[in-house]
Length: 618
Image (cartoon, rainbow, N blue to C red; front, side):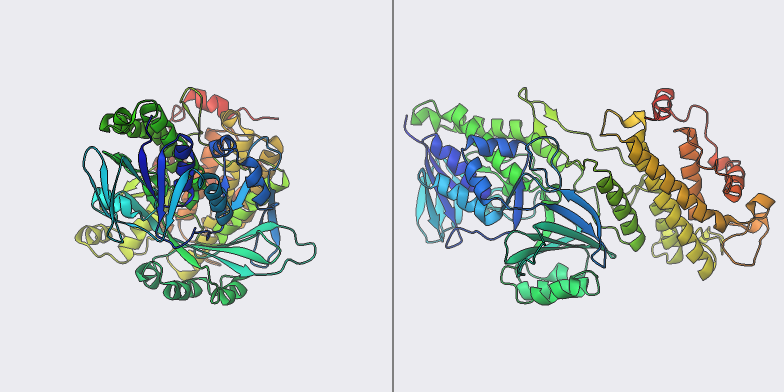
């Protein structure tokens, strides 16, 4: 057969992977890259699941392992640098992957590996780009930046998240692109010689204010740094993409006073030559091709770094695309193979087979919201749970998304959102009860629109659910924090100790027991805030002042605390108030549950769910 002429725009991981497979099929493949040389910038990436299998089929496993990053695991540290948890890498080739994959590598090393493996079967042209293209039906006419034109049977855009091929194909550079609510990440390397006994261990630190710092060591002489944040700072939002000076200034302001190694890192960042800022986004399209023009890799389906599946998706997607081209175009003469019918059928099959994979990878990414806790308390809850998981050597599951030999998706479902759910006028959602209450109180404090003013007019003066005075509000926040943490710990205990979750995730009776003890510890701390309930008084977080019952306003803290006590008792059959030293909380619970709004029917929880939930693993 005569080979098809195929042009690939982009010599990154997706483009070079596709060139490897198409060249192996015997097609005439050209890869163009606007950069003057092979771009080997970028930090540490990994392969998981089917990405590893594709790598092995390429015969590149040995070469990959020879260049793999020697990361031994990741530690979670606090602001003083104290280790709170450690998760070792799984290098056994068996069982679940940890945070550190068995197949970790620097992006530049993987790019060189794929380039070296494909360059004998594909022509690479650096310092060139596409000016425009037109699908003529029988071929694609491409005009290059130098003014030259040529015709190809197929054009594939593998030119990244901000793909120019996609823009030309769809007529917009933003169609299908969703920015992730102010999420930004800065990547760079810093010189830092390894110290004796240090090891190749990644470190992660979460700072208040929705900020995070991670360092990873890949060589004896330098480390990688990742600065992540959720912010709508005008300076960063308005910085032109690639304006390194403006981006560095913005990150310096954002991370000032963050703690841990922030000061040292920010100082060294000013001299970094490989600084790169990414505005986190997801690309999701209804289709990945039109006629003889197709997209692959981030150009078609950017999953965002939050998924950890970008490299795997690029490698597997290229393999599927090449396979469908081979299936539909590779067995006929050129006239049939390169005909529009064969090419279109191949591209349609490519989307049909691979889109379920990407749907699972991208599921919930946009809706998931912030990845960094905002408060010191939220960070404390997270690190305590991580410490518990680390201490008990429980598996941290990096959600696998795989396709079985029969083409069926095999992936754990994302849990349903919490209720109630408030739909805002701009179509966004608030999914947590406390957040909904906060939202309405904020509106009443400073109403702007007419409907907000009308709602505020119906709010009784001094009846805030946060408290009436500064001291009351502070006490409410204290109780709310303790109750929130207790709720998180009880939820963790249920997931590790109740039969309800036994088929969904690994269980551990020891972990469940420890989490329950920590939960009860928090209740003992809360007990003092409700002093007087056991004697019929209703003291409300204000020292020395006991108010009449009718003068007491229910606080957000009351609601969260009661929800925990009721939920644990009614669904899971766990009475958290059996301890003899909790008389005030027992009185509070008994009084609060008599409220009309707090009553639930006998059949509120389905009988089969309740039966499983109440069976605890010994």
